[in-house]
Image (cartoon, rainbow, N blue to C red; front, side, top):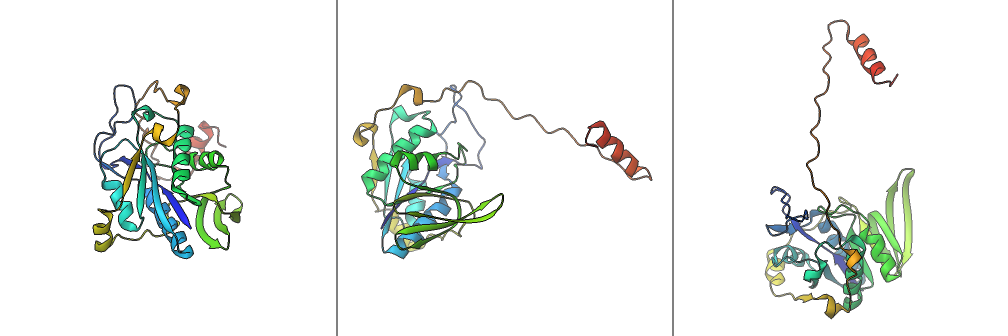
Length: 253
């Protein structure tokens, strides 16, 4: 079984956030593999190992830095497909799902594994949208994934408890951070990653056309307001009354 793991190069979270003049995130600095994607890659590798299959990486990125993909290839993925086109700048989540769907079809993958959300976009919608684009069932927010015959079974946490959900293959799975412990790349894997194929494809090569209304225009970007200092109550024998008065002023009591 071939499994496609969706990955995303994101700006280094340890560096200051920078924006372009159009308000979009500046991606020209150092990029790294999104930490959340390492869990998806690990789950994909385990599914492939359980079925005697292989893992291919799929990403939509305009970065020319190969390091993030090489990091995932070093874990054990055999190849990477990259959708890169200047027309994709500012693409919304649904367009991202359409592009990833084209990569899935091109790869011949039967199962897709994604993170729950990316560290730069935080939409949390791409996995479900990708499943809709492909016409496959979606198993989202999985904290545990296993393969049982021609079905994938996941456990997911809900407000009412832990749910066990199954879906037939093909399907799309999104996994939560901490669902597994990602393996470390071995020296052999790091060396092998340098020769594993990375294929870059344009929209035309994927047979896709980008709708103009599928591009985000950033209207405004501003810093989040600072947190106001809390009120400190020193216990000098009147602390209980002071706390009651404070809550009463907030109309909590």
